[in-house]
Length: 582
Image (cartoon, rainbow, N blue to C red; front, side, top):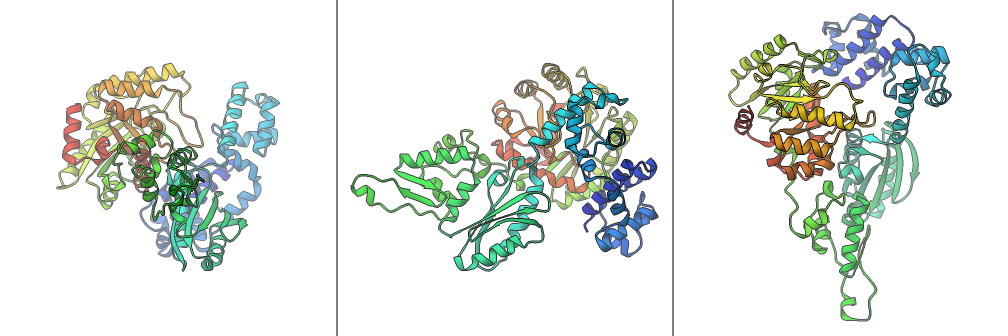
């Protein structure tokens, strides 16, 4: 088992201990240990083999024994015993926003609610308000959360689907007879939420039986839905349906284009084809029936690549991310498809957390990880004091961090660490630190972390007031949404973008997989208004730095070019920009 898998089991043990009414200190110890494991740079297996687990602060003998058991057998007796005491439906209830283990335990004990279905019925019957601490508003909020959960029950975050798809493609590519292989659908278009995974490959007929067998028998397949000569489907262990289609080499470019979508984009392509006397589908081009004329005897266009398809339609190539029927056809006709940002354009990032607030790794560890990525800089934005739940920094602690970063920069010749803060936007739009302290940072990320239930007008005014502050550099996660978990707070994003343009402020794409906020649908407006974009991972651990990749995908969907994204700039250009903003 990898560190992440062990961390998940240890964390669930902590939750199960809460649900069974165990000593809260013991439960907290398991939750803390899970966070520690998640942030470890050392390999757990090596630590266990050398009997060094207890040398890690926060891992005692009991938890160390559980970890060792997991690593050796893939299971832990404590975990199995606790799971046996709690109905599986109770654990499912943890997915509901606003219900933690303590409240679920009360519902289970007082009303014997042991499933999501029973909880919904109890809310409709107004049974929850009979319990102290639960009222009419609680029932309303739970029902709203349940509706949101139901709408997103068959949806998955991009990174989860991406990881599975990459693994499957890598496995299939190794099979003899496979020529081309990749994923298609919304995953290739880099949508923030994914339904199914579509895998497409080309191979000769004689190889297809072996390919389908390998696909349906892969280790990550939980069950097989269908298995045929050209199409098979499985449910993966993570709950995602994955479909595989096998086509001929000549059909591959057309199938890839068709199954990438979007449907609206495909409709536009077919319309253009008809104007040229052609029919276009997943198998290729064909001539539309005409009168007996010389033109009807023309051969069907042959395409070796997707680029050829667009060329035959009089279009420049349109990258998959742009295929959402948002004027990309018109831009391709006019040769105005932008040169989109690439992952390789990224030189660093800014919104990162360390152990100075709620991060799992130290500044030193995060800097080393950034250097391993080949970046030229990294910026920290630990929480300000209002975020006490996240270890928010007091003014004294913030100044101490800045001094440490200054000393660190004194040791570097070709790398820069920027001093930033994620400063809370308070209810009235003022900021959590005073102006004199904010002026000492290289940059300020202003974010909302509280009072999410204000009206759209109130939230919009609150943010705009914060953007007026001369020390604010950028707006962090503009809507506060958590994908598949929590809707964003109501806010008028076009007004926010206009205000950012008026006050010379930037906006971040928060690249954390659960946020991807600012939404890509607003990025073209930001681009038109001249609002600069930062792609920030909101990283709380070393691995989180890689989330910038997901932000790049969102930036590409928003038609952004490297010059519009500050992370693509040189250190000197960034330094000069931040100085001008002061």
